[in-house]
Image (cartoon, rainbow, N blue to C red; front, side, top):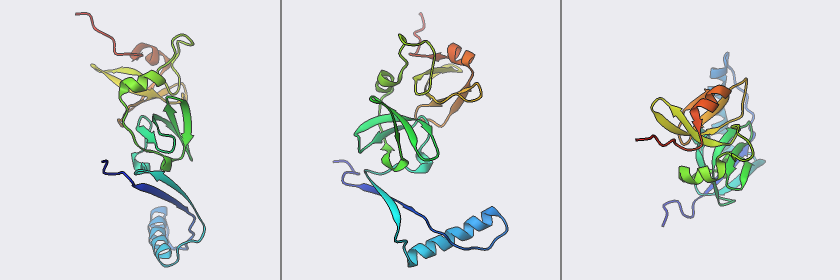
Length: 186
């Protein structure tokens, strides 16, 4: 039996306004955190939004492009492709899904499974695009990555379940990114 079986994550979104004194942003935020904690403890807001997720919801600090996740409500695994202000774009076997962070938990997915649904369709186009998964030749290794959205002539490649980000030009994409790890002749 799983240690987390039966656990639900409840995420509350509150809007709390407090008055504080201070000169700089850090000082204001520190004072505001104390006031908010005090206010919530003494008089919890009557209006709030909430969401309930099966399992332990992924925290903001643990969510990043390239992170393998599970969407409990849909019972689907995927990988975070990009993060917007209010949602996360997750590539799944059924395509791209935009969801809120509390809807995600840690996921387990082998890179081979991920390649089945997130690799590029060689018959449709020869270019790499956002959401494609491949192997980036980096130094003497091949690193599994997922591509983000191109900006200013460079495409971010996020290491799968790693914190590294590589900004690649179109030439680098064509030269250093592969659909599979090349087999070296012996």
